[in-house]
Image (cartoon, rainbow, N blue to C red; front, side, top):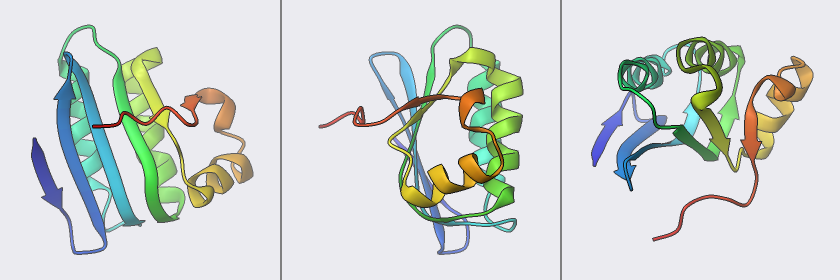
Length: 113
């Protein structure tokens, strides 16, 4: 497991479960804080095969910077990027921007344990 905090507002924990990358993003996401997510998604894109699960349940604030990071990840990973349990701010952001249908969104599927 790897934990990368950006500036105290956003925390990214990366792990692997059964060979599948799991990224857990919590806190407030803005233009100054998405670099860690960009790096983690780019790293995951360099690996072959497995879906990349991104748990967004703990995101308390999301702006267009997060949307842009997710779009970059989608391009790099194609259909392998799965958004798990997006919080209300993330869902609102995706809906306002008309992006929700571009992503595989799984509510209620956050891995436990």
